[in-house]
Image 1 (cartoon, rainbow, N blue to C red):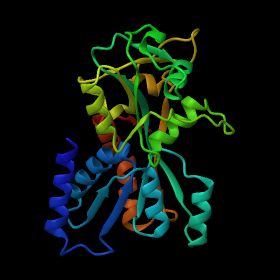
Image 2: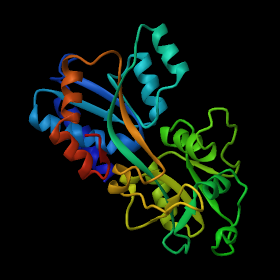
Image 3: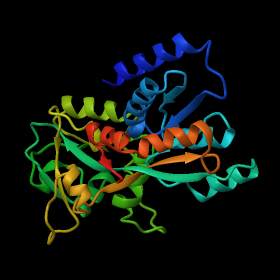
Image 4: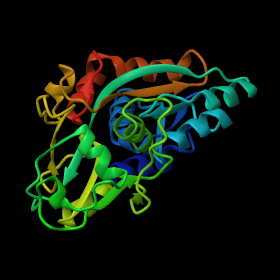
Length: 282
């Protein structure tokens, strides 16, 4: 599916690049979690506005924000909040990043279909991903070494998981992923590896959940309810690993940038959020 989106957008851009100008084209870059959603928005928007062009690329939240700061994209898509040092760099270049929350996401923790484990607490997840727990039998599974999969450090998904699972929201926390964790370049790469490796565990935005992996239920602690990553559970605030998905523009949106953002937040745009397995912001 990801390759299909890239093909559609690449073809559209190549076919129309001779007509695209700064006034009728915007560049969007960033979060791999959000890239399918942003591409779906872009495709529908261009159907409704055939004289306007939206180019979407991934690369991670950090990449998108760096591009926004350097002036090489109009909208950064991010699955994490912008950092203070990024705001400082932007202001040095005369840019005041403007934040717009456009959807919500639940972060799914996934294992292979053959793995008997189907639920874990936040503490167990923290102990697994920082290397304190190294064998599945320690959490009631088979006698097999755990294979840790993570997004690479430039990913907003990586940052969110580290800050909210390993460090449990403590801004002074120092916990890090275990040295043996495999840092993969995309959510799809994690999905593929988990599907083929019975000992693997990874995480990604719930929009990537498929029948080829098993999304486990997560509890805040041993006394809490184990909750699955579903749209309904995220909306109700029951699923403990959820986050906003964000647009950042170089200043308060105007012109074509505002028009596109307004579309993303419209009824039609939010229906696309639901259709791509994310959670509407309104």
